[in-house]
Length: 398
Image 1 (cartoon, rainbow, N blue to C red):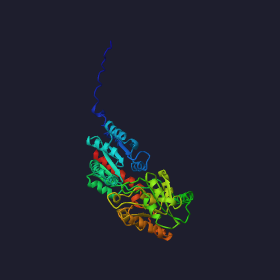
Image 2 (cartoon, rainbow, N blue to C red):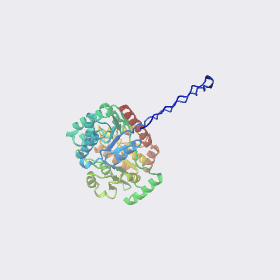
Image 3 (cartoon, rainbow, N blue to C red):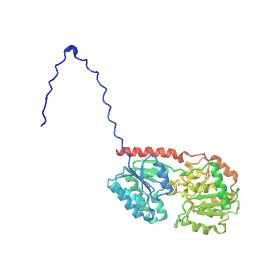
Image 4 (tube, rainbow, N blue to C red):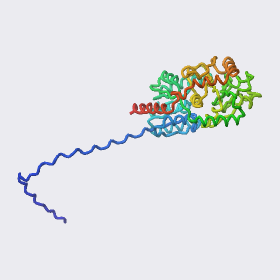
């Protein structure tokens, strides 16, 4: 058993011995505020992992920690199911999609309707008109899809200001322009080296004026056209041996171009096939003039295309149609050809006439008007712009 003891209290001190009160102590330091949780972002490109579209989006979102979904275009239904599962079982503050593919878009719309996750769409095309140009019977369906995709989105990143206006008209509450940029840079010395090397490999003389294009050679059956078709047909209208055409790209249209090229294939007309996008600027270095064939309608008039920023980086004057870009970005370095579409005779004949008469002095005059850089295609400013845009969207959710 533990025995309890008590200690007698000491006598109270005399008043004279009472000590002075101690000075007030400083207030205790405040507890540090808990760190804010990093936003949870999911991102993917409907063209697939490892593509230039995904690389673009990775750059634009480089200020954030992002979980990347590798979208497999070979099984779009599987991609749809996987995105739906991710958005159902995980909590994300925002999902960001580069492209407007149906599988990815429907998954985001489904999640949004259920109140699970807001989303942002980044696009370089007017979807409804583009599908309608390839399959007219489906155009109205994709027009409705595009409208609802924008209407349900929290924000829209347009490759052109024209697409931003389109998305806002469809009901998207917020939008910003990011026109794209060359993903891979080259110094002037590297451009000169690539020009010499690739021209030698293709058998093109140093003084030959080369018209070229880079892009996907998807064949449009309705109008019988793909990128490069305008160049191959136009050079066949001329008799000059000191001009050439280089078409870089792959797709169903490649066989059609081979047929049109005829005996000029490998002589004045060079079809390289597809190349990895990190080497695109090297092939552009072999060119003197770049083609940007766009129709003056609801498809082409909304676009810049990914090539325009790369053409500027490669220091190439550009030939195009009478689309908004050809006026808005022109300081004297563009040729505008007549006609409503690059497959029309008026356009091809004008291009052939340009090929027949162009001189090195004409090229130099256009180059003198081409700025060293265009602010629309500055990578750092676009990343800064998108970072602010995303932060504001995330802040509005909180």
